Image (cartoon, rainbow, N blue to C red; front, side, top):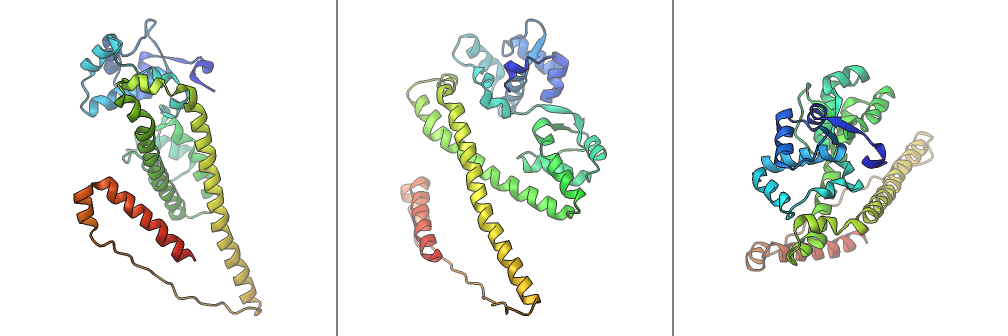
Length: 287
């Protein structure tokens, strides 16, 4: 369901709280024209504009200059109205401390959710984001089934670390293949972003399906290892099988002259060569 179909709007004070900023910052954005709120009501997309504006200012982008370009039609945040950007989450009404007490989850474990989603460790009084709330039922169920908090934490951290790597590579892929070429042809960042609307939603949907399929395929491999171990242990306990201990094998590969190659041909060429060699070595080692 999109923001438009929800039809929800917020007061300036509520929008500021959900964006995690002072109300004066929202007033400043409305004064600059970054946010258009003639009725003093903001949409969920406006909240995303507030969040992005704060991030841009923290990164050193002058908001006054940005607002001037927006007034001249040279820059826009209209792409934040599209459904794709609804994953930019606002803050909920609950702090980490309140949610931990309500759900019976150890506070230290609950706060790791923020780290797993790519942000700095929160304070107990920080508000939980709405997307983080969707992770909490999984933690709650694990603990109710007797899972050790250490095991819950480890899975959470590993999941976050690996999904962060995927997200970073995806962002690099998108900028290199879509945004970069368009901007190199003279399009503004906003026009380049808006030009992707005809295919962006479908590409995102297919990417998510591909990601889920890849995860499921890897699950089948990992679960098969568990099944083998379970059958093996059962047969050993019944005296019907003697486990074959296989010593671990390790292979070390060093690329001679890699530093020189990086200096002479650049990081991209060196990384490409390392990637090709990695695939060759992997095929051989698997066989």
